[in-house]
Amino acid sequence: MLTEKPDSPTAPVTHHAPKAGSLDDLVCYFEGDWVAMRDAKVSIMTHAFMYGTATFEGIRAYWNADEQRLYGLKLREHVERIRQSCKILLMRDIPTVDELIRLIVETVRRNGFRQDVYIRPSFYKSTLAIGVRLHELDNELYIIAVPFGDYLDTDSGVRVMTSTWRRNADEALPARGKIVGGYVNMAFQKTEAELNGFDEAIVLTADGHVNEASAANLFVVRDGVALTPPVSDDLLEGVTRKAVMELLAIEGIPVEIRSIDRSELYVADEVFLCGTGVQISSVIEVDHRPVGSGAIGPIGRLVRDRYFDAVRGRLPEYSHWLTPIE
Ligand code: PMP
Image (cartoon, rainbow, N blue to C red; front, side):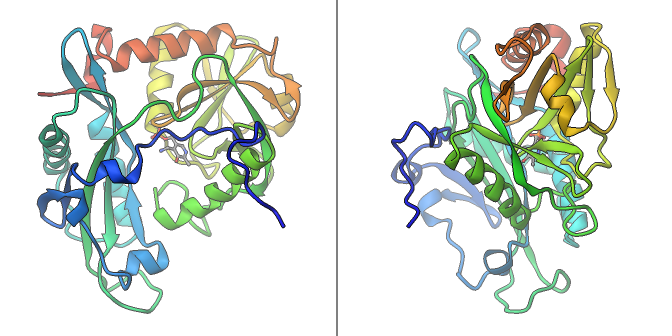
């Protein structure tokens, strides 16, 4: 029998969400009102619970201790993406971008956080019905915000394996939509990697190209050029991926968008992951082969350092990434 050993060094703990009991008093937005998390409950007959028919976003807000202020990161981009996910899932009556931003900011504000937080809005098919489909179902919105630390190491680099699972293709379950049911694909990848003693998985597309990590996009540095796969290679159109491209352009580092072979990971000078949860995390080993020198490389380090300064509001040139939450 396979038993999970959370204390085993082969199963690194990378999850820093607060324990369930401590969440009850947090304020969330639920079906049109702000309520305590303990009162935000859905029926087990909810369509989204039975079939995974929900969309979501993962957003971060960063606490700037010097300014005593929280900054929401890239709120508009996340809200635009969730509206696209809703369109893919045939959801109607989705609030405008400005209204959704207002609801998110208000949810965070009502909790009075003085620390980094993770925000998750989710539209879900709320009809109590059996029958797998997308049409003729109502949808509702919840927004939760919880204290959140690092999801993956950002200081010393991570070890990854190429997953034996492939990424769901656009013609099967569109990766560009952030669809709750689709995350079972990522759960297979992440669990396989952790139970085999790695920090994270790198996933290939159905045709064998490098796609992304289980919850992060990816850059590969070769000869001073930062490569990243195109959005047509079945990946989530990452908000952080775009932000990193902007940052690389400002730093004068060339970016090339093209499909990447698996073996390019083995000969790369650097590989780094980027995402809202992951932030910027350098890969120091792929499938037991050191990446470059086996330590965080100069471009990964530069991107990480600039990114963390930008998201905490320390770099005026990136202030357009941020929404102050008073
Ligand atoms: N790919 C997947 C599968 C993800 O879940 C995430 C996290 N949202 C990302 C990439 C990174 O996207 P973003 O930078 O928008 O958070």
